[in-house]
Length: 231
Length: 302
Ligand SMILES: Nc1ncnc2c1ncn2[C@@H]1O[C@H](COP(=O)(O)OP(=O)(O)O)[C@@H](O)[C@H]1O
Ligand SMILES: [Mg+2]
Image (cartoon, rainbow over all chains, first blue to last red; front, side, top):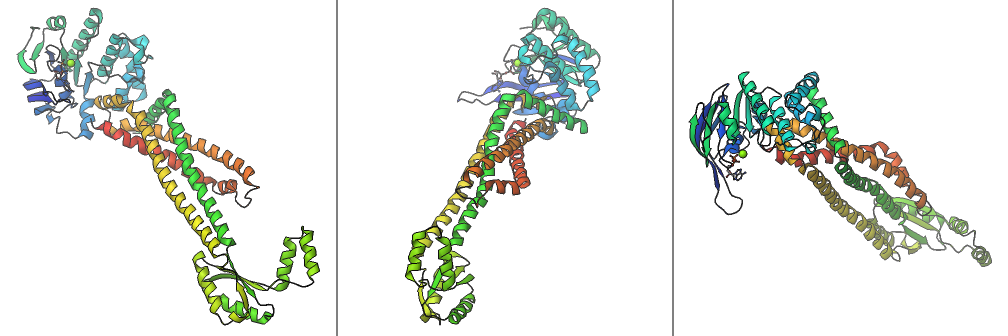
């Protein structure tokens, strides 16, 4: 379903320092309905990899194929179709600050053209599922870090995307909520969704027992079925 | 399609009402810009009217000798009327000249008395000539000096007034040119300020616009609510300006009526009511929408 082919990403430096090589000749495939974890220290290139799949950054070398199409050959105006098939949990949440939690989640359904009744039915449901039923009308700056993160998760799941890209979705959560969110991701995976989970949380990975890709300084150093977190 | 259209309007309205402070600031700036456009619109006919009033007062008078026969003067009039530069020509006989004088000075008993004491009519018969354009007076005056009836002419009172007339025209020309120049400059500044205000307002949403794109919103779905806000802000500013214009032109008129009764800004306002409202709405909405579109364009490249 997703194929990363010899991808390198070099960020030019804005000052006159050396450019950063965030990804170095990385290749792997993710099949349909697969659960893949991408692990590595912070700065290893996990976020960059997810940004390339979402066509938020362009690769310096190599190709990113999604559903048979090269993501970076698609016209900018056509990208919305691709992105509607992906649900993203951003590491920095990226919530709409001028919208309430409910509106943040509903926005994705509105983008897809869902009708109002569906929205009124589904959005409270998913907010309940991430434990935010009572915060639906709060604005992001009235929520804690962990609560924002859970709104982000709800927003990524609401439209039942084919693929979920989750960038450190538990980075700001306590063990109780971490457990809940990972269970939610596994449940969605078992219902037939591809999940790509980027994390540096050792406990999460070791409990999952699913495929693990390890990055180090932008290089893919390990790709194992039923992998474990090894530093 | 209809669903997303309704949604876009709703979102735009929500953004507008939630960012009341910023919306108000933008409306304020827009109101200034539209007021300026309105002022230029109203001032244009006012200055035209002033200029044409001044032009109307300029003429050439030809005075005839004491003993010139009325018939000769009428013949001269017919001949002068044939000159293509002449727009209007009026014969004022000795008696009429006296009448006009008496009428003008009827409140001044000393003058009237000295006139009676004089015992005869001291005025000359004259022809009052108006040309089509100010530059033609010189030519007309020349023709009079060389015409067949030059012997019965006592004097052409153009040369005495020549310098005054020329100064007046230089002045009205200058007023028109400076007015046009200022309008263009002020208009440009106003547009830039309006555009920049909208740009700053949208700059605040830069990150949110990027996120909208990343969660799959099409460009038009992102742009829509901003355009709606531009329309709302532009319309409100236009309506505010309309009310201000109404009040100002009425108030100014009351004050100006003793100074220049022939110029009524309020009448100009009334007779152009719908055109004015249309121009104000067009400027407001046009500026709002166009600035939003230009400002948002670069954030959509993601
Ligand atoms: N926009 C950017 N410009 C320059 N360098 C960047 C940018 N984004 C990330 N990097 C660099 O690329 C490397 C990988 O970053 P990232 O993909 O965010 O790592 P991770 O998500 O694994 O922590 C880091 O060294 C980071 O400094
Ligand atoms: Mg990261």
